[in-house]
Length: 119
Image (cartoon, rainbow, N blue to C red):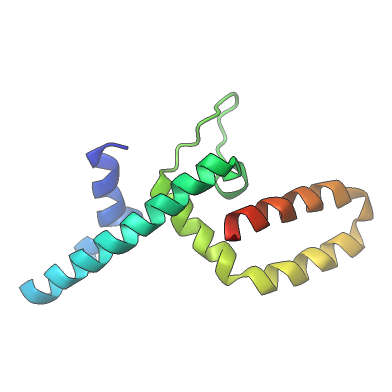
């Protein structure tokens, strides 16, 4: 990952640092907090890439492309949404499985991926 991707994530890609109108002390504290959370999200995103389940989190319209365009940071940040919505997702999946039993294989594949991402 290049420095440009990091600056994009800091400014507009996730934290919107430019819109934070803070004085010098608060800005320094905010940057420190963002650096810590950015590091955690990047490590989580790299972990997701290593597990091979990134295709469930970030999809691309480009055919034949193995590596997704989303950074490790974006993957890690998206995985947080999966963890937050875990209970809601399970109920939704159960309802969908009862409506479409012929899609059970796909649901199981998605559940396996969700477990890998959340755990």
